[in-house]
Structure formats: structure tokens, C-alpha cells
Image (cartoon, rainbow, N blue to C red; front, side, top):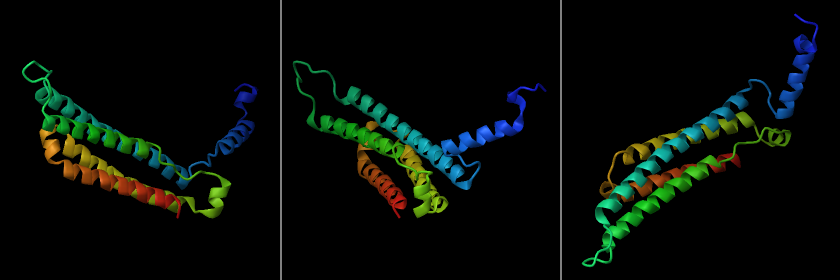
Length: 181
């Protein structure tokens, strides 16, 4: 080895530890693992909701092509019920997208001294993980309910789909409440 400072382990270790602490990293603590798990799980939940939204958008597009033809002299205005159904699918897509954005923006407890003074971080993160597990199951159920379905079947099951969206919203509220306990 060379006598360069780049090879002297003790000063390098000291620099690394100082940087790690400055970045808020405390080596492989349980809290760090739970925080990383929370971020990864929420990203996957958003992916599932993105797939569900994609299914709704594809079904809406096919529905519009099938039931809302371009205006003609004989029929200058679209069928009102077909237009309402297409708008129902569009609103469903927007609602799923809004939930996805809310999940992506959910906070995680900060890793600072003030937070640690008033709250035990690991139990709070464990509660969030439990909430995230429920969100994961709900998002997968919604995705599987919408996958490869046509617009007509989605419209028929719109009450059940809306119930699923309300359940996801309730899980989000429970997750937010876990942060303030």
C-alpha cells in the first residue's frame, strides 16, 4: 500500500463517520431499515395504483371509441348515457391518480433529535409498516379488480370500486394518524 492518506483507514473511517452522522445516517439501525422499507413499500403501492389507473384509462379509451362515435348529420350529439359512463370512467381514473399522489407524498418521521425526544421512532415506523401492508393489499385488490376489464364491466362495478377507493382513503387517514400519536 502507498503512504497516501487515501489508504490510511483510521482517518478515512473518521471522515466517513462524521459524514454519516451529518447525513443523519446511524449505521444499520432498525429505524433506518424500517424507514427504507416504508419508502420502498409506498413506491410499490403507487406502482400498483398506476397499473390500476392504466387499466381504467385503457378501458375508457376503448369505451369512447365504441360508444361515442364522431358526430354526423344524422346524430350530431353523443348519447347522454354513453357520455355519462365515459365521464364516470374518467373520474375513476382521476381518483386513482389522486390517491397515488397522496401515497407518494406521505411523510415518514424525521430522524432528528427533537423527534427522538418525543417519540419512539421504531414503534412509530412499525405502525406505518402495518398501515402500508394494508395499503398494499388494498391496492393489489383494486389492480386485480380492474385488470383486463372493459369499460362496461367497470361501470357495472363502479360502486364496488368506489368502496375500494374509500377503503384506501381510510387507510391513508389511519397512516397519518399513526404519525401524530
